[in-house]
Length: 170
Image 1 (cartoon, rainbow, N blue to C red):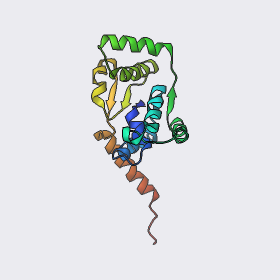
Image 2: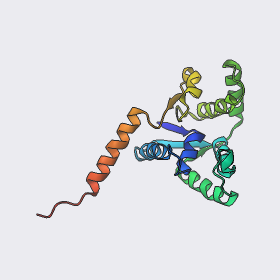
Image 3: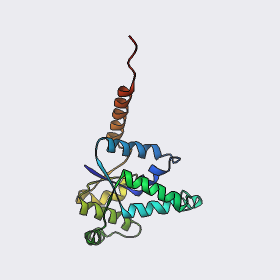
Image 4: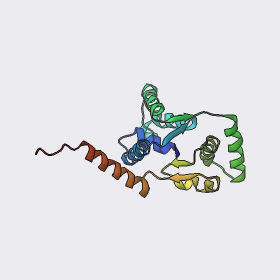
């Protein structure tokens, strides 16, 4: 299975101080551990750069472009960046017309277009309701605190703890 990480997941991934950071990080680590392929788009990375470099008093992280570049390199190592293609625009146009998308929701429609063009069915997001209209398109929004993911996080932690425990001296 292939997962696209929504920008809100990326922002929590890089901001360890945010209350949702541990949930996002655990979900991403679990999916990666289970060998799911994790993707981002150039749009996600651009939006993330905006969050990272935006002043903290304007709901950003207040980091410098140099710090943002270091974070960008980390994201590029952890995620596969899907290439932009002309087909994404065509699919985006179809989606915004068919679903009557307006305002800021056009950005989510572009993520869905990229997912459809590249055969990615799942999106890890804190805002599942933003993607609900695309269920007919085969898009499945999954929250990082979804019961199935939380259960797998616990199972993986238990396996790790069992594997790292030292046997008792006999």
